[in-house]
Length: 322
Image 1 (cartoon, rainbow, N blue to C red):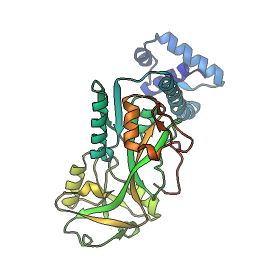
Image 2: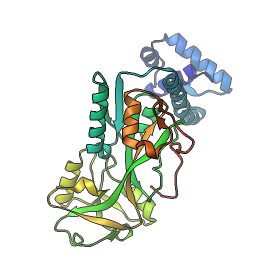
Image 3: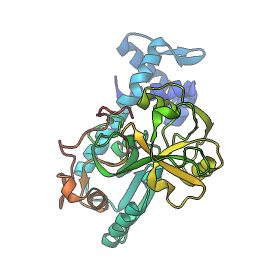
Image 4: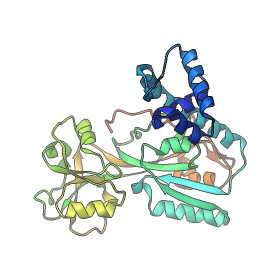
């Protein structure tokens, strides 16, 4: 299977049209048809129905493989480009919403002092997207965060030879209205809160489904969904009694009308990790050193940042259900 054929197949399947796919890809319709025909000849079966246009059973299965295959090809190109290329004046940093904080701001200030002409961009993106963006070069490095058992890695998708290192761990708390009957407790077991109303905020906090998976208790149900990335907006809903949320303790600092009760069981922390590939010396490598600390990452030195065997690849998970 040629990558070009796979990309064409995915595009036709997504758009449901040979002509629309040709327009998007910049090919003639005849060229698109020839690529699909060559792909089907190679596989020995049809992958697309022609009228109406859509994937066959075999095509549905191929779509399950195609995204990962194309991602790894893009990641390989970006990885080699990083190793072979010179330092860039661009610095694109990806981060999950709760990973953007004072430490990142201070580190970026140091980078700008060292590289005054750096073209800096910080992109706030969902956790499940960021490893692929690092692998394909859409961002130079990323900070991702989420709940985990102490010292366990975050469960990130396997998108290529990336290095990860923990840069922070902090306590997890249940956020509830200050007048809630449980607000004065010294600690809470999540398994005891399965009947409570929770806010489903996939961009910021574990969903009801993840709470069930982590505690082994069914019954968690979302009272409302919050699809934003502004933690203050989420906490305003908590304060108004719309539901509970599991968040890092620091996110509740100075927020009125919201109580923070530590999670007693299961043993969990809020973990932040730095994700990166090989980086030539330059703004991105300096930022990685500042965030990770040279003493905690053997692969960071004056020659840039290189993924080391001592760091895990995304996708390698510890025992935590998170």
